[in-house]
Length: 165
Image (cartoon, rainbow, N blue to C red; front, side):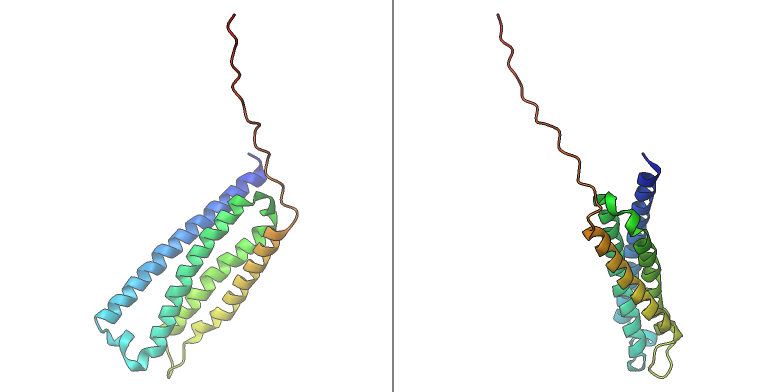
């Protein structure tokens, strides 16, 4: 395996792992949020904490979706190896945006000020921009004509009957 193919494999594995970790963390977070809702925990359920509830729900939903996006990106890297070199920046943007966006929502809901989210919400716009950039670069790479054609299928082997003399 060439060094480029090895690094592509490593990059794909990284995104598969990050995606599954995100799914585990954010699906667990959703279960925890449902538990707080079910047990009527005031810190989460009171009307005065509606902003907190909304921010935590947004963190859970975005984190779960981003886990699926990481898995899809890893599958894309595996399916289109010719565009891997053009996808490295997209990978970095996806990783940073995938952390900033849900973290911003979570921190924004952890400390609320008079119905407004906390300062953590300031992480959301750069995270969103990073994710848009990642999607644009991944699309550009996938649509590029630089991708090599897949290798041709081996010719079909036909069985020839041997004539007995």
